[in-house]
Length: 638
Image (tube, rainbow, N blue to C red):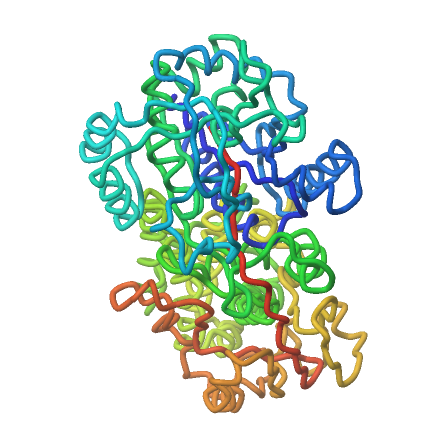
C-alpha cells in the first residue's frame, strides 16, 4: 500500500484564522480523502507555529501573557477541523507538543557541518520573519506588509545554503522534487541561478522575548522560527523509527501544500536542510496564490467586524461547511489570486449546490416516488446502492452516461495536477448533463404516459437516479457532508423504496449573519420541505424574483433577468416553463478549461441564476481588508 504524507503549512498564531487559511486546509483534506478512497495509506498533518516573534509582539500589544495568547489562538486553528469537516490525522503545536523540541534539537545537530556563527547586519521584517536586501523592498518597505523593516545588527548562527545550489537545481529539474504549478518551479530555479547566500538560523534570546527553542549548546540564541517550524514536518512523526520510515524515509509520497509567500522557505531552505541532515526530500510542493478581500490581501491582524466576516468557522456556522468548501474549491483558480466576499460564496452555493444539484436530486427522487412508488425502476430487490448510470443508457442519455463514466478519471487527473477547480468542473459536468437531459427527455410527461404502459420512463428515471448516485460518490472528497446526503436520497431502504424526497442543500440567500442583509419578508415555508400544492413532486420551485448579491452579480443583471423569465414559473411536476432550455449545459464560463486564462478569474461567476423564495435581498458590499497577504501557513515547516 502506497504511503502518502500530506501536510499544510503551520500558521503563526498572532491572530485568529481567516478564510485564507481555510483554502489550504480544505485542499489538503480533498487530497487526503481522494487518496484514501483509492486505497492509499494517508496521513494528513497540520498544526500551528507557536514560536514566532510576531506571536510575542501580538501578545504584548494585547496585554495578554504570551502562553495564554498563543493557546487561545492555536485552539481556534485546531477547531477548524470540525468546522470545515477536515480529516486531520495529527495536529502539532510547536510550543506544546513533546515531540517537537527534542526533534528540532536532533535536526540541528544533524546539520552541524553546515552551521557556523557570524555577525550579520540587515533589514528584518517581523511580519515575514525574514531578512531582506534593499533591492527586495519597494520604496524601502516590505512588499507584502507595507512596513519599513528594522535595521538589525547581531551575531547569529548561519546555515551554509550556498553549498546546495547544484543539488537543489538537479532535484527540481529531474522531477525528484516536483513544484506545481510550473511558473512557481521556474521562479525557484531563477532564485537558485541568481546565487544562494547563507541564511541566519538563530536570533538572540533577548530579541525573541524568551520565547522559542534555545540553540543546543548556546542558550543565548534561539533557533530561528523558520528552521524550527520547517522541522515540524518530521518532528510530528516522533522520535521512533517506524513512523519516520513509514511516512518520510520510505518510498511513498511526501506532499506539502503552501502559499506562494512561503515558497522560498519550502522549495530552497527546507530541501537544503534535509540534504544537510541526510534525509529524503519532499516529492511534491503544491503552491497556491492568495485570497483577497476588496482586492487587497487579507490581514490576519485585522479586528472587529472586518475580521469576523472572514473567519472560516463563523462562515461555516452561518452557511455550512459545504458552502465554504465549495467556494474555495470551485472559485479559486490554480494560478492567480481570488477575491472573497460572503455574497460570492452564497451566489455560488445557491446557483450550483441548491439550484443545480439540489433541484436535480430532489426532482429525480420525487418523480420516482410519485410515479413508481419510490421503487428504483428496473430493480426488483433492494440493492445496496442505486444502479450506476454508466451501466445503463436510456434513449438520448449518451452524453450523461459519458459524463458519469469519465468523471472519476478526469477529476483524478486534475487532482494529480493539484488543480481543484478543474476537478470539480469534471464532476459538475454530470449535473449540467443531467439537468439538460431532464429537459430534453421531458421526464414528467414520459412518467405520466408510463401509467398507460410506456416503458421508456423507467429507463430515463433509472439513468437519472444512477447519475445522482455517481454524484454522491464522486463529490465525497470535495463535499463530504453534502455527498452523504445525496447518497442517502439515492439509496433504497430494506423495502426496496427510496426515502421520501428531502432537500439536500437549501438556498442560503436568506442567511443574514454577518452580511447586513435586507430581507423583504420571512417565510416559514422556507424552513421546511417544499410541499406546495402546485408542486406535487416536492421539487423546490424557483421564485422569479432576483437576488442582488454584490457588484459581481450586478454586472450580470440583464442576463439574470432573462434567466428568471425562463426559470421563474414551473409546471405542476416541477419543471420550468421553457423546459426545452438546457440549464447552462455548455458549462460554467469560468470553468471552460480549454479557453481558460486562469490568472483572470478572481470572483468570476457562471451565468448565474441565483433566485430566492424570499424575494429581493440586497447584500452590502464587503468592507475591504487592510493590505497584508493571506498566509495560509505563515510559519509552516516540515
